[in-house]
Image (cartoon, rainbow, N blue to C red; front, top):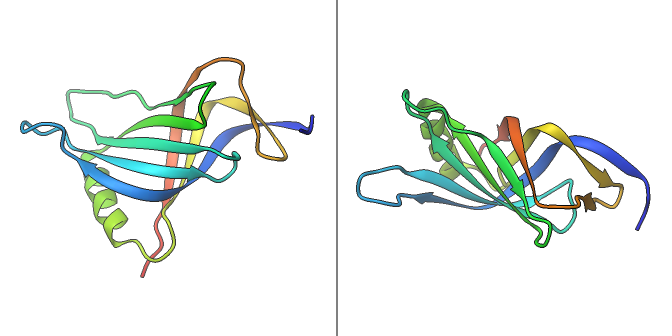
Length: 135
């Protein structure tokens, strides 16, 4: 393992599968995206994307466990963006959807892509961008 550590506040990922989840009959649907991490080695992320309502302000957060290579993230987006994303995920072309999550804090990653954390970590997500390929 190398000692050449760099600070980054972005995590790149590629969507491997997408599901629309409706957890109850009263609604509350969300997208569940299973992603492969691109700039962090041997890692995955399960990213939930929820539409927001006028009366709520959801927290965008990324949870990184210390003992497993599977991150969990939650994003809250405007309802019109959620509807557009849902359709675009279904129609995306042959390439996977790419997501870049910008974090409010930095993480240490070495050239090999190893992530350095000492304990379970939860970091606020400052922003996220999505790239959908077109057919």
